[in-house]
Amino acid sequence: MKKVFLVLSGGGARGFAHIGVIKSLESHNIKPDIISGTSMGAIVGGLYSYGYSIEKIEKIARNFDWKEFAKFFIFPTTNKNFIEKDGVLKFFRNLTGNTKIEDLEKKFYAVAFDLKNNSEIIIDKGDLASAMRASMSIPIVFTPFPYEDRLLFDGGLINPLPVDVIDYKKGDYIIAVNVLKKKVGKLSKEHLNLDLESLIEKNEERKEKLSKKIDSNVLMEKLKENDNYKKIKNKLLSIYEFFEKDEEKQLSNLKILEKIFYTNQNYIVQSRSYENIDIFYEPIAEKVNFFDFAGSLKLIDKAEREMDKILEDKKAFDIIKDN
Image 1 (spheres, rainbow, N blue to C red):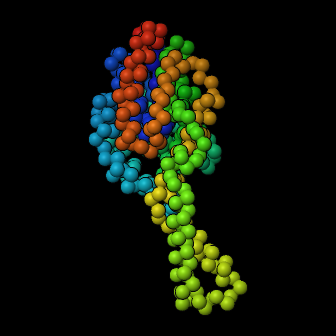
Image 2 (cartoon, one colour):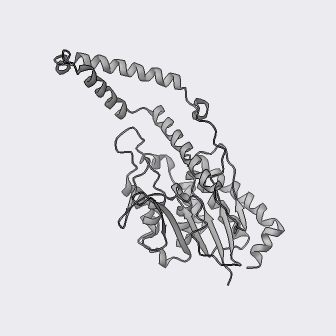
Image 3 (cartoon, rainbow, N blue to C red):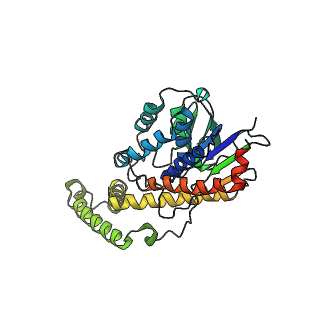
């Protein structure tokens, strides 16, 4: 019997578009038999495979307090650089319990990256909540997820659009959704939307104040005659810079991280051949960012409208209708 495969890419908050795609598929009486996903695609695909209606998944996305979620983030200004693992896993656990992937209503694959062995890991059995958590472990922002004897990161690092992980046969139909399609421009202060000169000036002022404090410190005064005084002082300043908390600096780091991710993942997708895909949808949303979860909610309706148009095209519709 012919089957319908749905492949959902990673892409951070832009992955909300996957919800709109599934809504459109259901309105055309198309229900995927097998789903593979990376990162946000694994989250939406995992919840859908679990048995949540797409309306329920949309409700979760729209009603969730994303500002509260952002408080979990510990931006790259400390030596920890992580979002608390247990908080995220608990969120998924509350939604899916201790459900095993092999017990799901639909066949489901999640993709993650094994840092230790530099390899792709396809998770198609075991704990669903852990699979979703592992697949979205963005480096620096999230802690890597320990899985069996491996340390797993976001699957987008190695396979952002996991078409090749599904076991399809001739005559099966593949619908792939790539939300990563975005022009990646030069990394400039205009793109970062930051006044870099102002940041540099502020940082110099802070360093100067700290330098005076160091010089006036009782213990440091005793070291002034030491040949290594300057090295010691510079080390203290560098430690200060590493741990200092500045919201604008955090924003800058996030923007840089976003561009690195889009560049890397777009390159992987564009360098691969997807000859067996029957419907390949790439929503374009230039102004929606990787970490803009609140702003990305508008992609749900946009993706639904655009997928409706694709399916209403007679050629695309007939491919699925014959199933």
